[in-house]
Every structure is written in structure tokens, then in C-alpha cells.
Length: 358
Length: 138
Image (cartoon, rainbow over all chains, first blue to last red; front, side, top):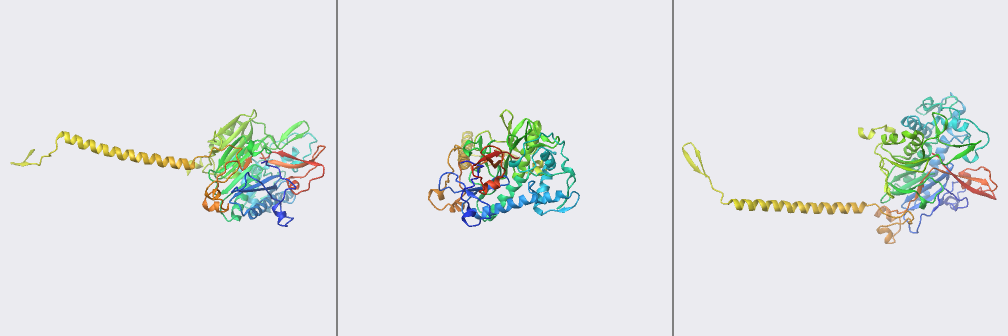
């Protein structure tokens, strides 16, 4: 089974139902027939969305629920849509804009991620990304013209959000790339489970950022870990079991582009405004939610030498891969294949040592 | 055995058991306790073993196919009833956590011609174009 590819010609459930305008989900075989789980996938948010659920049956309703969540999220915070709420708000710096509850929630989480990561995951790196050439959908990046980093990001404390009211700061461009996809997976998993009547369990995978909801399969959801987004699931570096929460992977190996003679990637160190150049090339983290895992995996890459201590202070299990390909396991990440990954009892947004305070 | 209370001597009943009998009784009670302790240990170990066996992780290889186990699947009942009978047991990964892949289209001669994953998924493939999968996101 190959992931990450969505065949344009694949038969879709929506097409089969005659709804040409609806997003196209394609049923995905998971192995032998008679499986008691169902899987389908579609292109979404510039990557591939996959829904796996048990018991099979209400996939159409669940897929529809995921569609709605992803479409809403795209309209709320996409940096590549001129009509997204954030893009519209940034058109008039200084003018207060009332965001929708969903957009305000997404931005609040992005600011919380910046706070708990000590500024390593900062939503104000949008201008730095644009300056480096990542100012459009990744597929359309113009490789011409060398550009130096724009300098440090303005910093998340310059974002003025009060409840749902955003006052865009001049010169600050927001990029929620480090949290939005994880948040989308969390929201989609809950929505899919509700649409399925609350029975069984669901897994939503947005380009490798995975959230689960409901009851897990016996022994948990088996999830492969890989640095290659185009890898076959059978070729995973390791398989782990997830009972709840979310898992996410960040890497500097992919989503790279060449700007002049420099090879750039998309994980920006807010302190410099340049792509991170640290000891870790890939970080995979499990947390109570996918947005937390997403935050932590990015923070680990940016933290560099401090990654292990930061992850440990949040009781997070992680798998780090350094530049030479050596694997470092942190916080109870299983050494053996098919092992359970511990999920922390407290949220990283509760701050370090939250579990001890409970 | 005698004791004095005032000027009277009172005779207390004498335990008829000898020292040997006392020793024997003590040993019997110790043996009885030991037997119960052993029985409790046997039951405890057996119960723990059963629980661990139930929750032990499967040792399936990652190349094994995703299959359903349990009474519903083995009996050939509709998979929907698996939810009532219990969660399925999956032996192979259902997905991967990776840096996110990005699906774009680029011309066969090279050079991106644009198109996001959504466009590619929408069936707007350009004739003569090949699909390229890039990876990576947070």
C-alpha cells in the first residue's frame, strides 16, 4: 500500500453519488478482504488526508464531516488563500477584525504553542517564509533569485488578539503551518467520530500528522514511522501503537526548495528568520492531541541540542533522528517494534510539570 | 499451678497439653497458613498471567496484512457487528507518520507547472504530465 498519492482517476465516493462538487475521496485498500476497518483518502491542504475507521459502514458521513472541517480550516487560516480570514485581516493592518470562533481558536493555539515552546514555534515567521520564496503554494515556488534571510521574526508577542478580535500588526505575517494541520486532524477526528454515531474509533491522517478519536482497535492503532512521505507502510522504520491522542513528524529533509545556490526548507528558526540548521533532521512526537504533537515535533527541530530536555520536561515521548541518521529515543518511546507509545497525562499547554501538580 | 490471693490458695486449671503437643499445634497452624499463602500466590500469579496474556502486544511483522480477528470476523458475521463484539485487532500499520507529502504536477520535461494536491486530486492532470510527490511539512 502506498501512501501520499491520490490518484486523480481514482473512483470517488462523491462522484459515485453524483455530487460532482464535493471533494473526492478514494477508498483505500488496507490489506486482505473482510477487514473490519475502512480507509479512504483524498487530497487536502496541500497534502493527503486519510481517514481510517472501525467499524466500516458510515464512511460517507465521516468523510463528509472531515471535508467540512478541512474546508473550514482552509478558509480560516490558510496563508495561500487570499480570501482566508487571516489573509483578509492582514490586508488592513491595525484595523480590528472579528475572527470566526474557529479561526480565533486556531490563532490562540498557535500563540499558545509559541508560549510553551519558548518562542521556537512562532506564527509570525510568515514574512520570513515569504522572503525566502515560500510565498505561494509549495508546488509553485519560484526557484529563481537568491535571497538572504529576512532576519528574526517579529515574535508572537506582537500579535494582538483579544478574544476573537485581531488587530494585525503592520509587517507581521502569520503562518500557522506548525499547528494548523495538527489542529485540523484533531478536529476532523472528532467530527468523523460524531458523524459515525460515536461508535468505534477513527484515525485521521493529514500528511503524516495523525489524530485518533473514539475507541482504539485492540492493542491500539498501528502506525508506521518514516522519514519518507512517499514510503510504503510496509517499509516503515518502526511501527508503534497509539491508543489515544496524536502523533506528528517534522523534518528538514522535505519540502525543500532551492533559492539560488542555497537549498532551503520550511522550518524556520524564529530567532534568525532562516531555515533551522541544527543537529536533528527529523522529530516524531506523541502527545495528548495532534496539535500538541505537531507543536512539539517542530519545537524539537528548532531547539536543537535542547530538544531532549525540553521534551522530557513535558513528559513527551519522541523519536529523534540526527543528521547522520542515528536515532535517539526520548521519554519512553519504545525500543522494540510494535510497542506502545506512552501518551502524557497532561497537555503541553498546561506547562512543564503539570502532571506532578495534578 | 497455684497462686495466692490473700491467705487463700487458688488452684488454676492446668493445661493438659505437653510441650510436644504445643509444638505440634503451632506447626500445624503454620502449615495451614503456608498452604493458604501458597494457594493465594498460585491464584494471583495465574490471574496476572491471564491478564498479561490478554493484553500482550501482537508480534506481527509489519508486512502482514491488516486483518480482523475475534469472534465476529472468524464467524463471518458482518463487520459492523465487530463493534458490538469488540474492537478489531490490526496487525499491520494503517498509515505512516511522516513529514507531509505534497502532491503536485510537473511537466514531463521538468519544471513545475503548478497545481496543488487539491488540483491533482481533482482530476485536472495535464496530458503528458507526470505526477510528482514531494514531501515535507511540519
